Image (cartoon, rainbow over all chains, first blue to last red):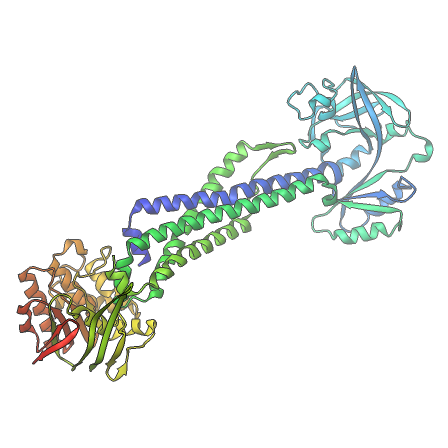
Length: 395
Length: 223
């Protein structure tokens, strides 16, 4: 009955209803996919530029990890650790002409650092650092400016520093030094692009001998599937009470509240889309039932069970939903995703691609079908409860 | 086979009471063909709707083969309508989206076994003279043809009794004759008990028994 009703019914109603459901399903999956893509981007950028998987820092009275080379060797030998690197962070002000930029300068081993982080792959001018580089500095584009006026923090940057420029660095320990900008990098992540790096070899020329073989933080990159808790336990056991650690989730900081807000936005948009779907199917079903009130009374009078009648409307609603979902899924997969890939949305943390999560698509489809069933059931059930005599003979 | 005792139906419309049936009693034996006659508003259709289990009486009793069906649940009544009774409406009441064949076998589908009922539906349409028109939709059939499709539909589940509510009210005289002859033939060939309602005196000739109603009351009965 449901199939015949659809095949022989008003095709315009069918097309309109299915079109509405296509839009509902696209709404159900598009914005959540975009926001999920944004969250994924933030998480990836944080791990790739700032925190890696784990950060170990000193706690207590001593502000450094010492001896760091032995500590690193221990960490690198642990199961589940892919790579580790040590950094020293020292506050400084970088001057170029009349411009000034205050930031932390990170002293790194360029080779080990590039095993943990991806900054070395984001060079836009000049080159990445090498071991042994003295008097060379590697700047984030938000620091250098590089005459890119469209940058978010351009007004606060050094504006026109390029690879090869000479800048002056005033360290907080009183050391003043001139550097040649070896390279400029652009990670598309503002928190990463406001940093500056020098080699450990250069750092050792600015600090006392006692601070050599030390670090202010050690960063650890884990293998996929590694037991993070176990790694943390083993590292922390080396110097109980003298270390603290941060996971990459902890390092998200203010971005965590943003991702939480995204989750809330997704929930609101989802709920709204489902309500729209429910109302659409309810109205389509209700109007059909009102028009067929007498016919349904006759069907019941000749022996068609109320259950069969209600079921036929539910099946019709499921067919509407199925067509809508299928068409929308194909449009999403073969039109929306490729177009967005060609013209991605730009956020302060980089270009965002739609994160297509298949279980998410399936669950959205299931929820939409469930909503369709309920929205068709309610008016149909109410209609079959009308007395037959009223349905057939009262106008 | 069907026994009715003191059947009363009162409709309440706001504060107004309409006594459509008052203490009607009758018995239909198997194979009877009975006509209920009376003026408009005499209670003929109301009586039929009680017997067809489409409406519930205010008081009284209806027995089908000794079983009291008066206070059955809605589900049980639906089952009775499907398996025991056939109902023919004055206005044919076919489903416009379905062909004649589909209209006839639709009630059969409620009892399962689709291939059997499709064949039976085709046979029934042949029996009522519409074997060549089974794939036509109601709008492509004349009034008489539509009513014959309705008759075939009422027979799909081999009912024990057939109730027809003014089956020829919307038909011309020739179509009316064809429809009534069809009912008569079914009664003779299949032994189906038939109760039909009519206000046309000419229809008396098709009935073995006549029951007259006036103002909801049974006033006469003739054999």
